[in-house]
Image 1 (cartoon, helix red, strand yellow):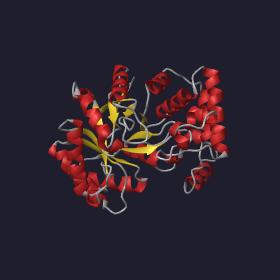
Image 2 (tube, helix red, strand yellow; image 1 turned 90 degrees about the vertical axis):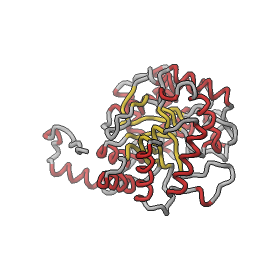
Image 3 (cartoon, one colour; image 1 turned 120 degrees about the vertical axis):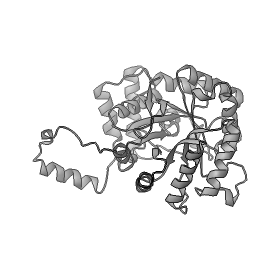
Image 4 (cartoon, helix red, strand yellow; image 1 turned 180 degrees about the horizontal axis):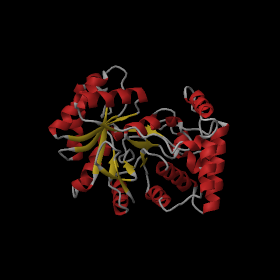
Amino acid sequence: MRYTTFGRRSGLRVSEYALGTGNFGTVWASGTDAGGARAIFDRFAEAGGTFLDTAGMYQAGESEAILGDLLAVDRDHFVVSTKYAANDTAQPHVSLTGSGRKNLVASVEASLKRLRTDYLDLLWVHFPDGVTPIDEIVRGMDDLVRSGKVHHVALSNFPAWQVSAAATLADLRGWAPIAGIQTEYSLIERTAERELLPMAEGLGLAVNLWSPLSGGLLTGKYRTGGEGRVTDPVRFVTPESTNQRTAVIDTVLAVAEETGANAAQVSMAWLRERGERSSATLIPIVGPRTLAQLDDYLGALEVTLTDEQYTRLDKVSAVELGAPHGINATIRERLLGGDASRFIGPVTPVV
Protein backbone atom coordinates (compact mmCIF):
# COMPACT_ATOMS: atom_id res chain seq x y z
CA MET A 1 0.00 0.00 0.00
CA ARG A 2 1.37 3.39 -0.99
CA TYR A 3 0.53 6.75 0.57
CA THR A 4 -0.18 10.24 -0.66
CA THR A 5 -1.29 13.59 0.62
CA PHE A 6 -4.99 14.33 0.32
CA GLY A 7 -4.56 16.64 -2.66
CA ARG A 8 -2.41 19.76 -2.85
CA ARG A 9 -4.58 21.75 -0.42
CA SER A 10 -3.69 19.70 2.65
CA GLY A 11 -0.82 17.81 4.26
CA LEU A 12 -3.12 15.00 5.37
CA ARG A 13 -1.44 11.64 4.68
CA VAL A 14 -3.72 8.88 3.43
CA SER A 15 -3.37 5.38 1.97
CA GLU A 16 -3.93 4.94 -1.76
CA TYR A 17 -7.17 3.07 -1.06
CA ALA A 18 -9.92 4.29 1.22
CA LEU A 19 -11.89 1.53 2.91
CA GLY A 20 -15.58 2.22 2.41
CA THR A 21 -17.61 0.93 5.34
CA GLY A 22 -21.13 1.13 3.94
CA ASN A 23 -21.30 -2.66 4.31
CA PHE A 24 -20.46 -2.53 8.03
CA GLY A 25 -23.81 -3.35 9.60
CA THR A 26 -26.97 -5.27 8.83
CA VAL A 27 -29.71 -2.63 8.99
CA TRP A 28 -29.88 -2.42 5.21
CA ALA A 29 -30.78 -5.34 2.97
CA SER A 30 -27.12 -6.31 2.66
CA GLY A 31 -24.00 -5.90 4.75
CA THR A 32 -21.86 -7.76 7.24
CA ASP A 33 -22.10 -8.14 10.99
CA ALA A 34 -19.58 -6.80 13.50
CA GLY A 35 -17.42 -9.93 13.27
CA GLY A 36 -17.19 -9.77 9.49
CA ALA A 37 -16.47 -6.04 9.65
CA ARG A 38 -13.60 -6.63 12.08
CA ALA A 39 -12.03 -9.21 9.76
CA ILE A 40 -12.18 -6.78 6.82
CA PHE A 41 -10.88 -3.90 8.92
CA ASP A 42 -7.97 -5.94 10.26
CA ARG A 43 -6.97 -7.20 6.81
CA PHE A 44 -7.07 -3.67 5.39
CA ALA A 45 -4.93 -2.39 8.26
CA GLU A 46 -2.45 -5.26 7.89
CA ALA A 47 -2.06 -4.32 4.21
CA GLY A 48 -1.13 -0.78 5.26
CA GLY A 49 -4.52 0.86 4.79
CA THR A 50 -5.18 3.91 6.95
CA PHE A 51 -7.96 5.84 5.17
CA LEU A 52 -11.51 5.02 6.31
CA ASP A 53 -14.71 6.29 4.67
CA THR A 54 -18.09 6.17 6.37
CA ALA A 55 -21.26 8.27 6.70
CA GLY A 56 -23.91 8.90 9.29
CA MET A 57 -26.54 7.44 6.97
CA TYR A 58 -24.74 4.14 6.34
CA GLN A 59 -26.74 1.34 7.89
CA ALA A 60 -28.69 4.05 9.77
CA GLY A 61 -25.64 4.84 11.91
CA GLU A 62 -24.56 1.26 12.56
CA SER A 63 -21.54 1.59 10.24
CA GLU A 64 -20.12 4.40 12.37
CA ALA A 65 -20.87 2.55 15.59
CA ILE A 66 -19.04 -0.59 14.44
CA LEU A 67 -16.15 1.50 13.16
CA GLY A 68 -15.97 3.30 16.51
CA ASP A 69 -15.48 -0.02 18.29
CA LEU A 70 -12.75 -1.01 15.83
CA LEU A 71 -10.94 2.31 16.23
CA ALA A 72 -10.88 2.20 20.02
CA VAL A 73 -7.49 0.49 20.16
CA ASP A 74 -5.53 2.94 17.96
CA ARG A 75 -7.67 5.88 16.79
CA ASP A 76 -4.81 8.21 15.84
CA HIS A 77 -3.25 5.71 13.42
CA PHE A 78 -6.21 6.04 11.06
CA VAL A 79 -7.64 8.83 8.94
CA VAL A 80 -11.37 8.85 9.61
CA SER A 81 -13.77 10.55 7.24
CA THR A 82 -17.53 10.71 7.50
CA LYS A 83 -20.36 12.51 5.73
CA TYR A 84 -23.45 14.46 6.66
CA ALA A 85 -26.56 15.71 4.80
CA ALA A 86 -28.78 12.63 4.85
CA ASN A 87 -30.60 11.62 8.02
CA ASP A 88 -28.76 8.99 10.04
CA THR A 89 -31.81 7.21 11.45
CA ALA A 90 -34.33 4.82 10.00
CA GLN A 91 -37.06 7.46 10.56
CA PRO A 92 -35.96 10.73 8.90
CA HIS A 93 -36.87 14.02 10.57
CA VAL A 94 -37.40 17.02 8.32
CA SER A 95 -35.48 19.44 10.56
CA LEU A 96 -32.45 17.12 10.75
CA THR A 97 -31.65 16.53 7.13
CA GLY A 98 -30.00 18.49 4.34
CA SER A 99 -26.82 20.56 4.22
CA GLY A 100 -27.75 23.44 6.54
CA ARG A 101 -25.98 24.47 9.73
CA LYS A 102 -28.51 22.86 12.10
CA ASN A 103 -28.09 19.43 10.56
CA LEU A 104 -24.35 19.96 10.12
CA VAL A 105 -23.77 20.50 13.83
CA ALA A 106 -26.21 17.80 14.94
CA SER A 107 -24.78 15.25 12.49
CA VAL A 108 -21.17 15.87 13.50
CA GLU A 109 -22.01 15.57 17.20
CA ALA A 110 -23.85 12.29 16.55
CA SER A 111 -21.00 10.95 14.40
CA LEU A 112 -18.39 11.79 17.02
CA LYS A 113 -20.41 9.92 19.63
CA ARG A 114 -20.88 6.82 17.46
CA LEU A 115 -17.25 6.83 16.32
CA ARG A 116 -16.09 7.26 19.93
CA THR A 117 -13.69 10.04 19.02
CA ASP A 118 -13.39 13.75 19.70
CA TYR A 119 -12.34 14.74 16.18
CA LEU A 120 -12.84 13.89 12.51
CA ASP A 121 -9.89 13.94 10.14
CA LEU A 122 -12.17 14.74 7.22
CA LEU A 123 -15.82 15.83 6.97
CA TRP A 124 -17.75 15.53 3.73
CA VAL A 125 -21.00 17.17 2.72
CA HIS A 126 -22.59 14.05 1.26
CA PHE A 127 -24.56 15.84 -1.46
CA PRO A 128 -26.09 19.25 -2.17
CA ASP A 129 -29.66 19.54 -0.93
CA GLY A 130 -30.65 22.12 -3.53
CA VAL A 131 -31.67 24.82 -1.03
CA THR A 132 -28.82 25.58 1.40
CA PRO A 133 -26.62 28.53 0.29
CA ILE A 134 -23.03 27.50 -0.36
CA ASP A 135 -21.69 30.15 2.02
CA GLU A 136 -23.72 28.67 4.89
CA ILE A 137 -22.16 25.27 4.21
CA VAL A 138 -18.59 26.54 3.91
CA ARG A 139 -18.82 28.86 6.92
CA GLY A 140 -20.42 26.16 9.04
CA MET A 141 -17.61 23.73 8.26
CA ASP A 142 -15.02 26.43 8.99
CA ASP A 143 -16.54 26.88 12.45
CA LEU A 144 -16.12 23.16 13.11
CA VAL A 145 -12.50 23.26 11.94
CA ARG A 146 -11.78 26.19 14.24
CA SER A 147 -13.40 24.29 17.12
CA GLY A 148 -11.00 21.37 16.60
CA LYS A 149 -13.78 18.85 15.99
CA VAL A 150 -12.95 18.62 12.27
CA HIS A 151 -9.53 18.88 10.64
CA HIS A 152 -10.35 19.03 6.90
CA VAL A 153 -13.51 19.52 4.82
CA ALA A 154 -14.63 18.37 1.38
CA LEU A 155 -17.64 18.06 -0.93
CA SER A 156 -19.21 14.85 -2.25
CA ASN A 157 -21.40 14.61 -5.37
CA PHE A 158 -21.41 18.38 -5.95
CA PRO A 159 -21.27 19.77 -9.51
CA ALA A 160 -18.05 21.47 -10.54
CA TRP A 161 -19.49 25.00 -10.49
CA GLN A 162 -20.57 24.67 -6.86
CA VAL A 163 -17.24 23.20 -5.80
CA SER A 164 -15.40 26.03 -7.56
CA ALA A 165 -17.63 28.61 -5.89
CA ALA A 166 -17.12 27.02 -2.46
CA ALA A 167 -13.35 26.77 -2.89
CA THR A 168 -13.08 30.39 -4.03
CA LEU A 169 -15.34 31.64 -1.24
CA ALA A 170 -13.31 29.80 1.39
CA ASP A 171 -10.06 31.21 0.04
CA LEU A 172 -11.32 34.80 -0.19
CA ARG A 173 -12.75 34.80 3.33
CA GLY A 174 -9.95 32.89 5.00
CA TRP A 175 -12.15 29.92 5.89
CA ALA A 176 -11.03 26.29 5.99
CA PRO A 177 -10.15 25.33 2.40
CA ILE A 178 -12.09 22.76 0.44
CA ALA A 179 -9.61 19.89 0.29
CA GLY A 180 -11.29 17.42 -2.03
CA ILE A 181 -14.27 16.05 -3.89
CA GLN A 182 -15.94 12.67 -4.08
CA THR A 183 -17.56 11.38 -7.25
CA GLU A 184 -18.44 8.18 -9.07
CA TYR A 185 -15.69 7.12 -11.46
CA SER A 186 -14.74 3.87 -13.18
CA LEU A 187 -14.19 2.36 -16.62
CA ILE A 188 -18.00 2.35 -16.94
CA GLU A 189 -18.60 5.90 -15.63
CA ARG A 190 -16.06 8.47 -16.85
CA THR A 191 -18.20 11.59 -17.29
CA ALA A 192 -16.36 13.22 -14.37
CA GLU A 193 -13.64 13.89 -16.96
CA ARG A 194 -15.79 16.62 -18.48
CA GLU A 195 -15.64 19.08 -15.59
CA LEU A 196 -14.92 17.53 -12.18
CA LEU A 197 -11.48 16.01 -12.79
CA PRO A 198 -10.05 19.01 -14.70
CA MET A 199 -11.36 21.27 -11.93
CA ALA A 200 -9.74 19.08 -9.27
CA GLU A 201 -6.44 19.14 -11.15
CA GLY A 202 -6.57 22.92 -11.50
CA LEU A 203 -7.55 23.62 -7.88
CA GLY A 204 -5.34 20.97 -6.31
CA LEU A 205 -8.24 18.98 -4.86
CA ALA A 206 -8.04 15.31 -3.95
CA VAL A 207 -10.62 13.06 -5.62
CA ASN A 208 -12.20 10.11 -3.83
CA LEU A 209 -13.73 7.72 -6.36
CA TRP A 210 -16.80 5.78 -5.33
CA SER A 211 -18.11 2.67 -7.09
CA PRO A 212 -14.77 1.97 -8.84
CA LEU A 213 -16.19 -1.37 -10.06
CA SER A 214 -19.50 0.22 -11.06
CA GLY A 215 -21.53 -1.71 -8.53
CA GLY A 216 -19.85 -5.00 -9.47
CA LEU A 217 -20.59 -4.68 -13.18
CA LEU A 218 -16.87 -4.58 -14.01
CA THR A 219 -16.28 -7.93 -12.31
CA GLY A 220 -18.23 -9.61 -15.12
CA LYS A 221 -20.16 -11.68 -12.59
CA TYR A 222 -23.58 -10.48 -13.68
CA ARG A 223 -23.12 -12.11 -17.07
CA THR A 224 -23.24 -15.54 -15.47
CA GLY A 225 -25.71 -15.03 -12.62
CA GLY A 226 -28.74 -13.01 -11.65
CA GLU A 227 -27.99 -12.48 -7.99
CA GLY A 228 -26.67 -9.39 -6.31
CA ARG A 229 -26.75 -5.73 -7.05
CA VAL A 230 -28.57 -5.99 -10.37
CA THR A 231 -31.65 -7.54 -8.75
CA ASP A 232 -31.44 -5.80 -5.36
CA PRO A 233 -33.80 -2.77 -5.32
CA VAL A 234 -32.05 -1.24 -2.29
CA ARG A 235 -28.74 -0.82 -4.10
CA PHE A 236 -27.71 1.37 -7.00
CA VAL A 237 -28.25 -0.53 -10.24
CA THR A 238 -25.68 -0.28 -13.02
CA PRO A 239 -26.98 -2.44 -15.88
CA GLU A 240 -25.05 -3.52 -18.96
CA SER A 241 -27.44 -1.37 -20.95
CA THR A 242 -25.37 0.12 -23.78
CA ASN A 243 -23.13 -1.17 -26.55
CA GLN A 244 -20.20 0.71 -25.04
CA ARG A 245 -20.66 -0.92 -21.63
CA THR A 246 -20.70 -4.31 -23.31
CA ALA A 247 -17.51 -3.43 -25.20
CA VAL A 248 -15.84 -2.23 -21.99
CA ILE A 249 -16.61 -5.45 -20.13
CA ASP A 250 -15.49 -7.53 -23.13
CA THR A 251 -12.18 -5.66 -23.14
CA VAL A 252 -11.72 -5.97 -19.37
CA LEU A 253 -12.28 -9.74 -19.58
CA ALA A 254 -9.86 -10.03 -22.49
CA VAL A 255 -7.12 -8.15 -20.61
CA ALA A 256 -7.82 -10.25 -17.53
CA GLU A 257 -7.16 -13.40 -19.54
CA GLU A 258 -3.92 -11.89 -20.86
CA THR A 259 -2.62 -10.88 -17.44
CA GLY A 260 -3.84 -13.79 -15.33
CA ALA A 261 -5.63 -11.33 -13.05
CA ASN A 262 -9.39 -11.23 -12.66
CA ALA A 263 -11.68 -8.59 -14.16
CA ALA A 264 -12.02 -6.62 -10.91
CA GLN A 265 -8.24 -6.41 -10.54
CA VAL A 266 -7.78 -5.27 -14.14
CA SER A 267 -10.39 -2.55 -13.66
CA MET A 268 -8.69 -1.33 -10.48
CA ALA A 269 -5.25 -1.49 -12.11
CA TRP A 270 -6.49 0.78 -14.91
CA LEU A 271 -7.81 3.20 -12.30
CA ARG A 272 -4.48 3.23 -10.49
CA GLU A 273 -2.60 3.89 -13.73
CA ARG A 274 -5.11 6.62 -14.61
CA GLY A 275 -4.27 8.31 -11.33
CA GLU A 276 -0.55 8.11 -12.01
CA ARG A 277 -1.08 9.86 -15.35
CA SER A 278 -3.11 12.66 -13.75
CA SER A 279 -1.96 15.69 -11.79
CA ALA A 280 -4.93 15.18 -9.48
CA THR A 281 -4.81 12.78 -6.51
CA LEU A 282 -7.25 9.95 -7.30
CA ILE A 283 -8.13 7.69 -4.35
CA PRO A 284 -10.58 4.82 -4.95
CA ILE A 285 -13.02 3.90 -2.20
CA VAL A 286 -13.20 0.12 -1.96
CA GLY A 287 -16.28 -1.21 -0.19
CA PRO A 288 -15.94 -4.98 0.25
CA ARG A 289 -18.63 -7.04 1.93
CA THR A 290 -16.37 -10.09 2.28
CA LEU A 291 -12.68 -10.82 2.82
CA ALA A 292 -12.52 -12.36 -0.65
CA GLN A 293 -13.66 -9.10 -2.19
CA LEU A 294 -11.07 -7.16 -0.18
CA ASP A 295 -8.35 -9.59 -1.28
CA ASP A 296 -9.30 -8.90 -4.90
CA TYR A 297 -8.88 -5.17 -4.32
CA LEU A 298 -5.54 -5.67 -2.59
CA GLY A 299 -4.39 -8.05 -5.32
CA ALA A 300 -4.98 -5.32 -7.89
CA LEU A 301 -2.09 -3.36 -6.33
CA GLU A 302 0.25 -6.01 -7.78
CA VAL A 303 -1.20 -5.91 -11.31
CA THR A 304 0.71 -3.93 -13.94
CA LEU A 305 -0.85 -3.21 -17.31
CA THR A 306 1.20 -2.74 -20.44
CA ASP A 307 0.86 0.56 -22.28
CA GLU A 308 -1.11 -1.25 -24.97
CA GLN A 309 -3.52 -2.77 -22.45
CA TYR A 310 -4.03 0.54 -20.66
CA THR A 311 -4.64 2.34 -23.96
CA ARG A 312 -7.08 -0.33 -25.15
CA LEU A 313 -9.12 0.03 -21.96
CA ASP A 314 -8.86 3.81 -22.12
CA LYS A 315 -10.13 4.04 -25.68
CA VAL A 316 -13.04 1.65 -25.33
CA SER A 317 -14.33 3.44 -22.21
CA ALA A 318 -13.75 7.04 -23.33
CA VAL A 319 -16.69 9.46 -23.19
CA GLU A 320 -17.54 12.37 -25.44
CA LEU A 321 -16.50 15.50 -23.56
CA GLY A 322 -19.19 17.63 -25.20
CA ALA A 323 -19.39 21.42 -25.29
CA PRO A 324 -17.25 23.43 -25.03
CA HIS A 325 -14.43 20.89 -24.91
CA GLY A 326 -14.89 19.48 -28.40
CA ILE A 327 -14.82 22.80 -30.23
CA ASN A 328 -11.99 24.07 -28.02
CA ALA A 329 -9.83 21.07 -28.90
CA THR A 330 -10.50 21.65 -32.60
CA ILE A 331 -9.61 25.32 -32.37
CA ARG A 332 -6.42 24.61 -30.43
CA GLU A 333 -5.39 22.12 -33.07
CA ARG A 334 -5.92 24.69 -35.83
CA LEU A 335 -4.07 27.41 -33.93
CA LEU A 336 -1.10 25.11 -33.48
CA GLY A 337 -1.13 24.10 -37.11
CA GLY A 338 -1.38 20.46 -36.10
CA ASP A 339 1.92 20.62 -34.22
CA ALA A 340 1.17 20.49 -30.51
CA SER A 341 4.72 19.34 -29.82
CA ARG A 342 5.86 22.98 -29.90
CA PHE A 343 4.42 23.30 -26.39
CA ILE A 344 6.43 21.71 -23.60
CA GLY A 345 3.38 20.62 -21.62
CA PRO A 346 0.12 21.72 -20.07
CA VAL A 347 0.06 24.75 -17.83
CA THR A 348 -0.54 23.83 -14.17
CA PRO A 349 -2.48 26.57 -12.36
CA VAL A 350 -0.81 27.94 -9.24
CA VAL A 351 -3.06 27.51 -6.20
